[in-house]
Length: 116
Image (cartoon, rainbow, N blue to C red; front, side, top):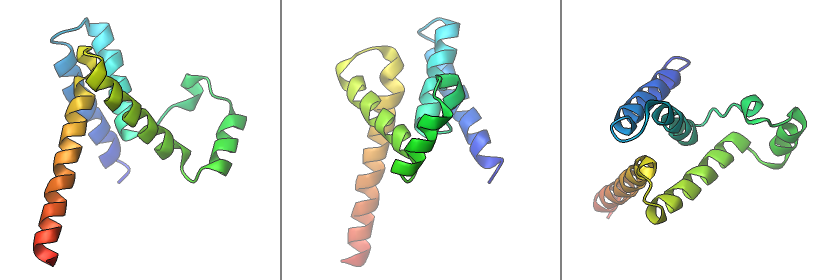
């Protein structure tokens, strides 16, 4: 499991970067692909974000899994932005939302069909 998640993050970044670099400058494509990958898959680097250890400890005390919570909150915010802001860098969030909702509906329909 230690190697699977980092490999998946790298693959997600590569795919997103390859999409972004077709319509934005290379440096911006790299940055936006990294933001999307980290927002989607977690693993936030709080030191780089400038968060103190005290804030992290308080968040760990108040929330069961602050990294998971913040990741989901950020995804929800960006998906909402993606439908109002037509910036091309939000396409990945719209695609995520469509895939997530499609999977949710599909698997619930299968569950209903199998369980009656």
